[in-house]
Length: 226
Image (tube, rainbow, N blue to C red):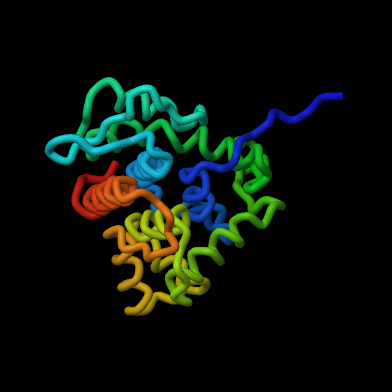
C-alpha cells in the first residue's frame, strides 16, 4: 500500500495562487505580473513567521539562524540571508520560479485538478479545474468578511487580502467581493499595514509585510510586464 507524501500546512503563496485561480475559465488572474505577486507572498510569509527583517535603506534580510521549515520558503530565506536586498530585487529574483511548484502543491492537495486534454485531436495539454476540497471558497469567504463585512482580520488573512489587492485583480472578483469604494478603501488600508487589533502580529512583521505589499503594487502598476 502506497501513501501520499505528507504536506505541511499551506503557505501564504499557495493560498494566494489558489485565490487567483478562476474556476470558471481555468485560468490564473493576473498572469502577466504573477511572479511579482507570488514573490511578495513568499516574502510576506517569511515576515509573518519572523524569518525576515528590514535593514538600512528599506532593504530586507533573512534572520540569521532562523530559517523557515517549509521547503517552498527556504530558498528565498537563504537568498536574503546571504546579504540584505532591496524588495524589488528580491521579487525579481525569487518570483519567476514559484508558479510551477506552488501549482503542483495545490494539485497534490486536491485544491486544483489537472485534466489532460487533446487540442485538435493531436496536441496534448492540461486544463485546470476546481478541486474537491472547497478550500478556495473558504479563503474567499475569509477575505470577503474583511473587505466587505468589516471583520477584524487575523494577520494571515490581512496579508492575503492586501496581496490580492496589490495584484490589481480585485475587480475580477466582483461577483464574490463587490467592487465598491468601501471595498477599495479597506483594501488600501490593509496594503498599508492597518490590520486592526485582532491581527496579532509583531510590529516589525507588519512593517515588513506592508513594505513588501507596496513593492508589489509598484511592480504590478509601474514596472514593465514580462
